[in-house]
Image (cartoon, rainbow, N blue to C red; front, side):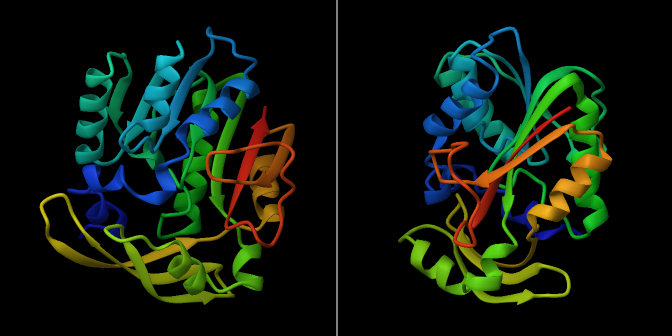
Length: 253
């Protein structure tokens, strides 16, 4: 049986590119470039690359990128966009829980819930972190965003989704946050690229900063920095607060 995140991305590439949360690509890539000192020799893997927005933008700037995703529909759109924009990206279909890369990349990026935090068990989410780490070279760096567990302790996830909702985009309803598991169970309502209306029961894991720090330490990272993730404006100056829906993690081996 297909999981909700597999069903969601079946025919959703065109609509996905119009979602409000994917509009910050330029600023996010500026931050990534800054973090690797604009060194064009750095090899990058984009895990859960979706329709390839970060991969394509970084390729335009001269970087060598491999983009991986579980969804064939998202990857087909990514390849189409790369071709339209005249850039070369190595897009491959992989499950991030079973990645085979070893010591190949200088940087791994996993942005906008690129697989991590969507999995149905904590063990599966950890596999993704583990595989991203294995794919990195010895002094590699890992930049990713994930849902901030401090947010639902102080704010309503339901109200957050309602305030962010835009006409024509997907909408979340029936949110219920479980304090024992830090998982939000909700129903996402959307219309796919074929005009079919769908409702999916979703389940997403929020992470506390201390949890993530511990998980990354067990994987051998020497330095772990966590910030608030502002859409399109990632910055080391943004101290993580309870008002940040997402957090930005920068881990160095």
